[in-house]
Amino acid sequence: MRELIPEELIRILEGSPGLERAYLVGGCVRDAMLGIPCKDWDIEVGGIDYDGLVKVLGKCGRADLVGRSFGVVKLTVAGGRTFDFAIPRRDSKVAPGHKGFEIEFDPDITPQEAASRRDFTINALMYDPRRDEVLDFFGGQADLEQRILRHTGSAFVEDPLRVLRGMQFASRFDLTPAPETVALCRSIKAGFHELARERLREEWFKWAAKSVRPSTGLLFLEKTEWVDHFPEIKALRSTPQDPEWHPEGDVLIHTCHCCDALARLPEWRERDEASRIVYMLGTLCHDFGKPETTHEKLREGRTRIVSPGHAGVGVDVAESFLARIDAPLELRKRVKPLVQNHMAHLDVLSDRSVRRLAKRLHPETIEGLGLVIAADHMGRPPKPAEAPPTLRTLQEKARELDLEQTAPKPILLGRHLLDRGLKPGPEMGALLHRAFEAQLDGAFSELTGALDWLETNS
Image 1 (cartoon, rainbow, N blue to C red):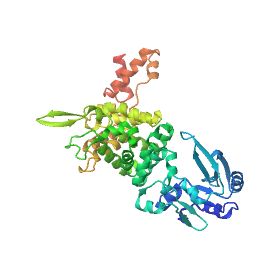
Image 2: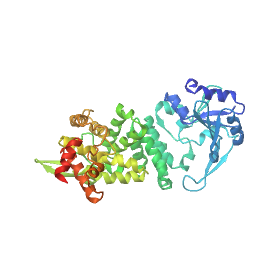
Image 3: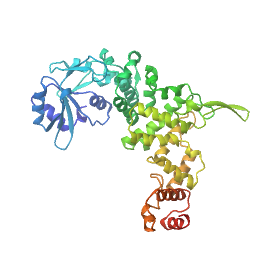
Image 4: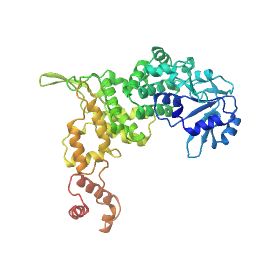
């Protein structure tokens, strides 16, 4: 493990008096043991008070007191790399909510007691760089090897957010929750209402950006009954699908397969974090309209299960969910058109329809929609896990029109109208709108044609 730790951090820990009881803790130890590249390094230092820690670190680089109330010092070394150092502390729950903790710093706390306050055994691992030794007081190494998610101790119940942390950890590392952990999560189900919405957002966004098997976290919510707090997801479980098109089962099963399929796509993994979040949430929400629209219908002598209009209905349901997890407005603007248009590849794909689709998707793109469509089609085992031919047709048409990664832009602009003596005002705005609609319909594709159109339509 030592070879995975930045050399400058090793030098600081080994060569700085006052850091003799410094241990790497938490996620950086877990990730190093899994061979996952780590960006965030957390070090807990015993045997020294906060002011003493600041003094020691000040000799190693720039020490910023960004988290004094939590005993944290952020050290920035030459080259720009940062490390978070902290004094061990005891947290006591004294009131509801995430601010209802009484924090007591104790430099003399033992490593085992310090590790006991962490949420899950896989996060309670510590590493002693001087002895090149992993300290494992709660069986975290075995749980990591066996892919088990297990709470560390009874203090788990003091912060209900840990259930949602369990959701995203289960998905990120494909973990099976221990039965006793599931039972404990159920026992604090009412604590959901203590959680600030921004804390919900942080955990959902980690789930959406980092999962290798997103379904594991969704099913964890169901096992712990925390899915009750997300009725848009819970409703999917009781919504059937026509077995001819969806042999995999109900809408929740389908959604789980879709999210897993998206996480396997190299094109998704290669996107920036914000886009990965958008496309995973778009896939999660894409069938949110089915519970309201699904019914049986007699068609050609057979009873079929249909969900007409579910894409449109799903937009409002998605908005409800996204608001509940405090998703910012700009993200909602990207997710909702993906839900609205995830069936667009089944329409007649003319130049006109593709131009209008690209406009409806803005600020999202046809390229991004393609990931959601592919995941949707691949989430129907035992049907082949492949993108539908209609998606390839849509993508080819979008490339021909240079609209795969952008929306169409108006060719005729206000300055062109001003040059022809028209005055600013509502009439000019209406004319520009008509011109853009004509452009989308294919009346013209360059400025000369736009000006010719203007001559006969103004």
